[in-house]
Length: 197
Image (cartoon, rainbow, N blue to C red; front, side, top):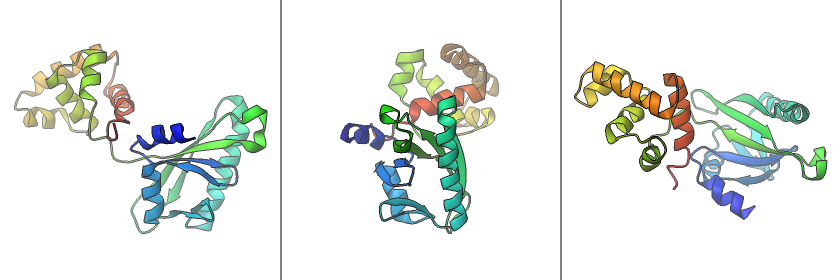
């Protein structure tokens, strides 16, 4: 578990490993910060607890649904829980891991608290290695990941809107994607570890 912990600690988003009873088996550093903040999620007697009884019921139901769906292959479920004294909700993605020795009562779940803030930093060297992106193309990709418009990026980089459109087309071709949403999804996945590496 220690090796898994070091890997999970590199993730910017809070991630927990829990069992069916919501006992916390492991939480990365980001999860520790969230749970200490008591923003509607906390630890009581070693268990993950939601501030409201309806939230606890929804979490338990989602774990049950996830456990039952796991043999069919659809192992990922989501639950939206209210945050205490904050706008928005906690968005949780829950995935059931295959149980050891087929013991479904011993199933473990990964709970990922989804950040609403896009990653702020791209792995520039990796983007160059993987896709041969230039420095300017990485600047454009970074702007897209921050949900800037093409005009905003053009203004920030002191060039024309058409130049940015050309950059975007080259980035699509090099990254083998066909849309801005596909590119953002790829960049988001590639940037998950950058804040802690």
